[in-house]
Image 1: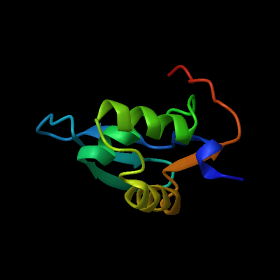
Image 2: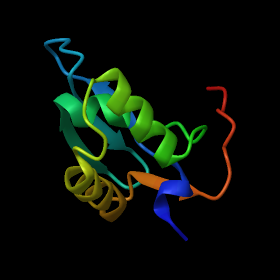
Image 3: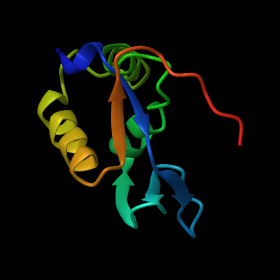
Image 4: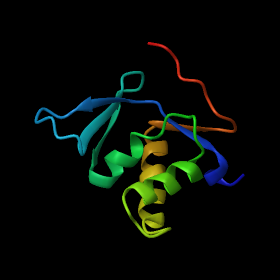
Length: 102
């Protein structure tokens, strides 16, 4: 199945950096003690992985909001998603997920 049609959701919680810079944060999954540092565009993109929109929708909206040409970061996004999957920090669902109340 095409990954763009799937619904990504972060399995990790964002931990804001000590300097409160919103374009830089660290995500951490306490269940497996895995983490990942995100900066700039990657941080902005990952904030959108809530399982409600497909990866394709998330990327298109991100490109419009950031005023990027279409498919500008395809290779970088693929590397990011692979790293997140390899560290068990993201999973993909076949249908939209409902946000869980915490």
